[in-house]
Length: 512
Image (cartoon, rainbow, N blue to C red; front, side, top):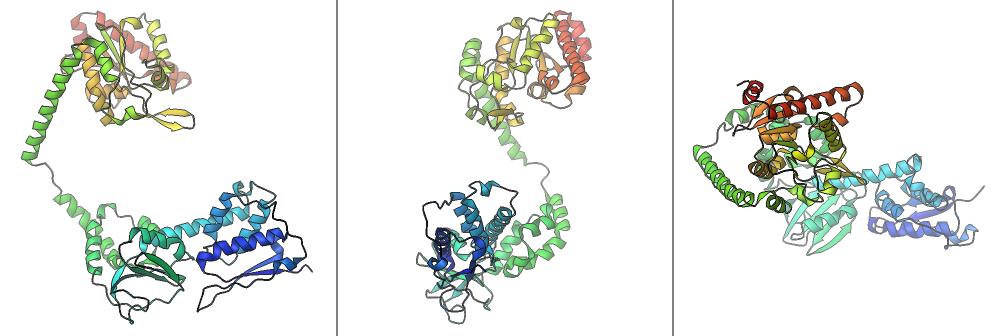
């Protein structure tokens, strides 16, 4: 029978990582397989939590060889978390993984391995326990008397009791030292204690929960907790998922939770009833004054820019920072076409191709638009083409940039440039391609498929024909794509007819 080597670890938790690394490396040097190593950690109620006592591994009969030992950085991070777990098998599992890593350097990436899955689960449990400790530790101020804290050596000390699942006190205590570095505190748990005094952090053995008097600040904390509670957002299962009931007995505010849940619906109804329905008249006047001032400033700026024509407007737009979209886009994609064009086509926003080239409608949707216009004899060179939003909004996905729809705020900021383009070009008619263009021009971006083919008028009487965007056709397939293409063709043909037809025909289309 092959003899078994016993490795006994009897150290403070803080030193356990170094001790395990030393013993594991020694076992690897003497080529001891996992089944021949028995890991043992002795617990004592006094003195150190662990003390060192191990069999001399050099007596294993194998020659030592350290030159071939490989320990990946990812393993060390995993080991650091797993060593804090309460499972007594953690040493054996970690050494088995280390042993197998010597022959399989990609073992930690093998998610089908039962060993790695178990170690990752243990590490995740430790990290979650640390997170819960940072969330559910509640300090109370206690005086320096032997009956309340035998560890206290300062006139004022803040005390907290916590019951972790794992040996995490030394892993988590630095968080509290950084956050509460201006006070002396003591955190006690059954699995170890941490003391922070005069800027120094120290550790001691775990203790049983002491009996403490009521904290004077508990009532203040409960009042705060009660007032920040929003009954309209009450989700009991979600709350218990984030604050498991096993922590409740050590949290002062949890005594309020049952009553808060019972009264949540009534409080929610009262909040709705008491909510303000209209802003004060004075606030309305202030907002109106601010809006008037902004409108006047914008009118002056627009007059100065538009006086220089499209070239000056394009130059100004090239440095636009009115919304955050300019941060990631390559450049401003301004409109192009004759300054006296009779028809203006407004798209939604530049795409990837437009962002790189700096020209509107040069990507797949633009090529489709060109084809449809060519079918009806509409000359692109005679039309002013632009977009409601001048910068490309996207989400990176690997090397690709995935299109994202602009928000209402971004459309509102960019509308200033669109209105300036309209003021210079003075088109007789406008075609809104898609919902974003319709939103920028008419204030409504919904129900485009129902509104397509209809003509709506702006405040100055300019007719706007609503239709679909060419990119919507590209997202369809088969018969649906062909039908959508015919819709766009018919709408552009209608725009061409209305533009060249008599005024009474335009009035007929708008129902006036």
